Image (cartoon, rainbow, N blue to C red; front, side):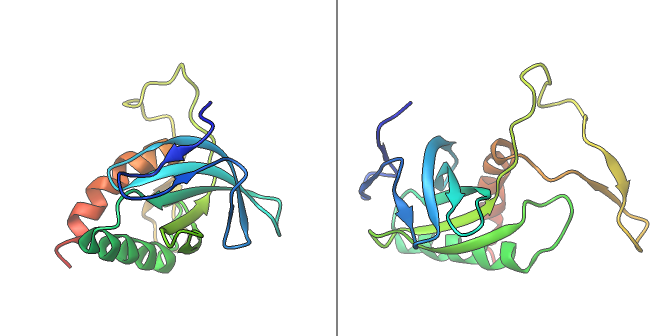
Length: 151
């Protein structure tokens, strides 16, 4: 396990135990996506685990794109999308986004396998899947962020 993680070339290191916005205590580093570094954190008021994504670099276009991602995620309420919990800034003014924590799939499952439960969305007849895990979300979020740049 890493003792501290540098979220990007122009940001300060973040260490396990760091308290974000007086709401989330970072537990451990999880990985990195295209725009962000992911951590598992504990909600201090709720006792619930969350996934925290911290923006890796503070270039204005990335900050704007990250803010759009947070707004879009906050407005979405879909069974196959990890729910938004909160967003804000670290003590070093780095934007972060907190989402519901979902455990990683079993190591015996291939990423290409369809092992999710599929059921109709209530009232719509459209199929819905279980929410993505943090690893699946980080992989997909880079593609979403690229497309948000066109908004």
